[in-house]
Image 1: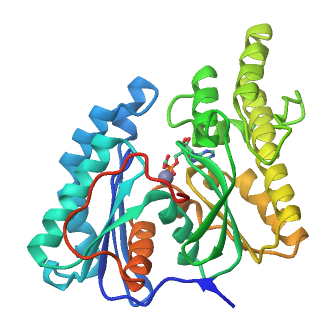
Image 2: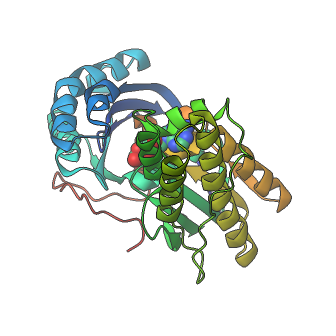
Length: 337
Ligand code: KG4
Ligand code: ZN
């Protein structure tokens, strides 16, 4: 049976700078030896969202130290690095450029292969850090910039089954958090607030796109805004809990329908919103109801990290990644061509 697993590679350094996390990790022999993540939350918090120019500057300031720390924790000298993998897209152009040029400098200096990794393929490979993924797999990718359902028929063979018509799932959490005055990043803030709320107080609309399995979150966001305007005294915790329930329900419903319409061995979850405990609980329940294996990486591997990029890079290298040092930043890169 076909599967995706963490390749038993040589020493691979993975770099990730596509958004607001400067991350580096070292993997070798099918194990994660280190994973260092420096968050830029404090840089962007005053603006209520990621400011691309500030992100690039903060990556620039942090990337050297983060890479050195990842090698130090792994107990690997620079001369021991056998390949460098880096996110080349999708992401913020100026942020991606910092990672790509740093990786290029390292790879040229060390005379080792340079592998450009798709960030979303990285999120998929985060699943392999917890164990092998039996194929065919259904992957729910829910990050700040993307929300989609992807079928992996064979290693590297992707089909998009559904995408969002408007906001990404993480983006919806971020926007509703801003509306509720909960700050940035919104996902964890909503989840914390929701823990003390009553998720049955209001039933916000579960937006269902009639044709196909596509997602939509803008109607839900508008419904929350209208409710807040009409009920200024309502408790933030309750609204957060009801919004979270509606968003999770929408995702869970689409996943269940996709499973019913296809034939899969494993349900994989990736991307920052995959850190949400309520979503994880619901998806684990669906996987078990339909008899699928669940590959739901721990929350720290759902949000952006370097280990997932090293893992995807190791697999790409094992499949014969292109040689040479011509690597372009590709902000609009897509898993499905
Ligand atoms: O994958 P990620 O770290 O970066 C991107 O590639 O975008 O995802 C970040 C997104 C943000 O929108 C954030 O609010 C959301 O993931 N997120 C969450 C949670 N933790 C992060 N959403 C819901 N619940 C969470 N616990
Ligand atoms: Zn991501």
